[in-house]
Amino acid sequence: DIQMTQSPSSVSASVGDRVTITCRASQGINNWLAWYQQKPGKAPKLLIYATSSLQSGVPSRFSGSGSGTDFTLTITSLQPEDFATYYCQQASSFPRTFGLGTKLEIK
Amino acid sequence: QLQLQESGPGLVKPSETLSLTCTVSGGSISSSIYYWGWIRQPPGKGLEWIGSIYYSGGTYNNPSLKSRVTISVDTSKNQFSLKLSSVTAADTAVYHCARRASSSGYAFDIWGQGTMVTVSS
Image (tube, rainbow over all chains, first blue to last red; front, side):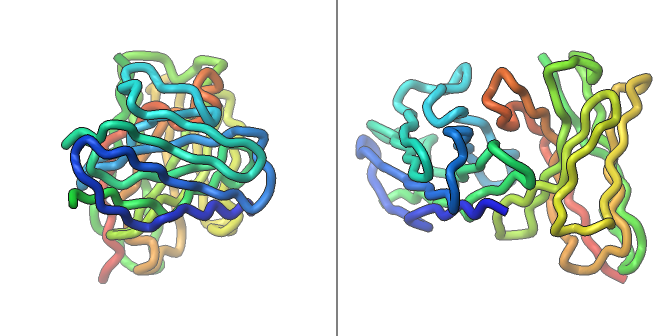
């Protein structure tokens, strides 16, 4: 199985800040990397797919980058509604695997 | 727009079989470009992919769940289902169904709200 390692596990930031979350795959995943946002009691929401493609309806302050085994999610100019938990997921091979999540908290 | 809704018992006894159904509305489950999946999340923990199914019945399951998982599809009802046998307390989780789209990089682009299943006697 491909292991997905996210860092940090939690981060505190303020409205207007820029935040970067990292995800590392245990082997190459051909850029089939997705990012999700999850708020308490809600289903995950797809933000980014194929490393850097923005899902329809997602604000442009969210962006993804990376290649090979190292990937990042960047949120510029944090808004109050962005405080949530973020997960990466590899869509390259079975079984599909997720990172353990990064909780973005208000400073 | 397309919506997914999970249904099934919220309480299952240990050693019994968990059975859930996902009903797809606002679109056809028989589209050739989608797979349909189950993902679960134990309380306070991360996400675990359980398995996925194509409308024709082809499936991929997570080997970590060994042979306990059966995923099936009923195109006439626009539904797909999950059965997880021999459950234990470790199977207590919120169970989500979701759509996997090739047009979205094989990510899960639409999710059901999830249903909490507790395994307890």
